Amino acid sequence: MRDRQQLIDIIKQRLSPNRWQHSLQVAETALQMAGQYELELEQVYLTALLHDYAKGLSGQELLRLAEENNLIEDEVDREVPDLLHAPVGAFLVKRDLGMKDEEVLIAISRHTLGSTKMSELDKIIYLADMIEPGRDFPGLERLKCLSFRDLDEAMLFGLESTIKYCLDRGRILHPRTIEARNYFLKIIKR
Image 1 (cartoon, helix red, strand yellow):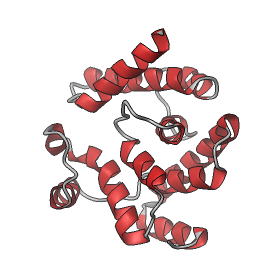
Image 2: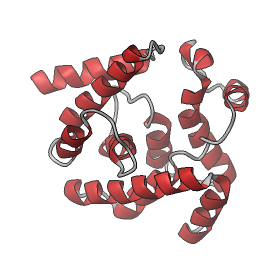
Image 3: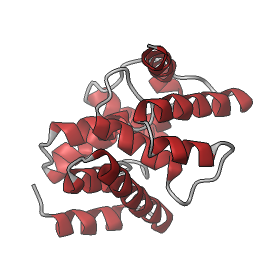
């Protein structure tokens, strides 16, 4: 795998200036959270920087890469190909950058839809992506507070915010997001 500075240079060249700024803000937010939850800082930082590696690709290109590499897990993936930037990004980070850390690759892959099997790293990347300083949506301050207090409660709130956003705009709900929401609802009520 390439060293940290090489990765930063590659990512910076690959992403638009706005997307690069977003990735930097996600990385800084994730680092703050990682300190709270005592995760390995370098791993968190690199995962956050890499999380949108495939974001600049067109829906058609994301779909092509996903189909060629067996990354389609649900028919909704074909209907909303932009969501494929997460699994395709993980695939490209492994293939193009030589990243072998499976925890990093899984966290990149899960950062848009969530999962019923999320690690602490997965949750931090998902949440940091939602609460980085460039974001603005109803409930953001509550989600920020929860993110630094209880990752599972924050995940439930974040997933429900995403579901509400999709419902308000008449967008398709991905089954994995609903499954993840129901999973976090169950474990919080225990």
